[in-house]
Image (cartoon, rainbow, N blue to C red; front, side):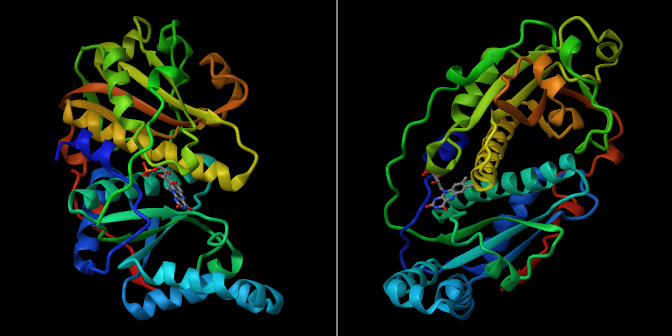
Amino acid sequence: MELEQTIRERRSIRKFNPAPVARDKIVELMREAERLCVRDEEEPQRRYLYAGTPDARKRLADYLTEKIEDNKVAKLALGKLIGTFHKRFMEPAANIIVIAKKGKNPAEGARNYGTACRIMQSFQLLAWREKIGMVWITEPFVLNERFFDRIGLRADERFVGLLQIGHFDKAPRGRGRTPAERYWNVLSAPGAEVLPANESETGARSEQIRYKDRPVPADLVLKLLNHAVWAPNHRMREPWRFTYAERGAHGRAEQAANTAPPAHLIVSMRAETDEHKRDENLAAVYCLAQNFCLLAEERGLDAHVIFPNWMFDEAAARRLKIPDKEQIVAVLELGFRGEVRSAAAEPPPGSDKAETLRWSEL
Ligand SMILES: Cc1cc2nc3c(=O)[nH]c(=O)nc-3n(C[C@H](O)[C@H](O)[C@H](O)COP(=O)(O)O)c2cc1C
């Protein structure tokens, strides 16, 4: 199946049939998903908790309903609901809880959370090709301290999502997406004048990439975005906004060395005071970013997600004409890849490092 088609046709699946999904298949797909997203990581910044056996699935359902069952009045009133919950968590062949490290600073935290989300999106796409469906769950009943205690979430960790996985008979119809043009702005000033330098950037590459002296056409970026917007996003909030910046004639020193990316795509989203909604929106943006990276790669365009400290700098956002009510949440460096200078410094996708899955059973 074509990548574009997979991205557009993937649906969140909430009704599963009883066909089993082999644990080994799930691990293999997650390994592949990591390989597609992780390049320069010293050690994994996330882990996976797997509930695939009937016992583990029951345990998961018990953990999720414990808080209600503790409260006698609620238990009486919600007895039926508890039964429904159990069924809901016993039905899918498998569940995976994804947990990311918080990181030592905001940029590191964003990178760890963003990378976990991007991996989850790649995993959804790879699984879809094998007719395995899933839904990403972040409902409030999952986000409770009691449950986090039960699954052993540590103080330096953050819950990213619970994936319910299984085979299905029929995919629901997709709800259309808003064209990317609606959320698109091209900076008229050359990016080299308004983009801050990437010093102390989190997510920097270990290799020195060299770009071809070839512009990245804005209409190509927009075209890819119009496929990428088929990312999962809860309640169809489509939180993403795009700012496209070409480097322009300035920044010549770097340009001459071909080490400065010819273009940047900056993704922002409306500031959200509700933490839960904000995390869901962030996750949706990173799913979109992952769609974009995969689509770009198919066309020989290098798209690399970075988390520079200036993402959190209001003055930088103003220079980039990001509206006051929005915040920058992802920055993509774009360029057609020339030669890689020191191949040895680049752990190729699929290196052992990227394949170290932190996997345990619930
Ligand atoms: C971060 C995130 C959280 C989500 N949480 C839930 C959830 O708690 N319950 C649910 O039914 N679907 C959840 N979804 C799925 C979305 O509702 C779904 O992606 C959206 O309705 C678009 O449908 P599609 O995925 O079929 O394209 C979530 C998706 C994402 C990306």
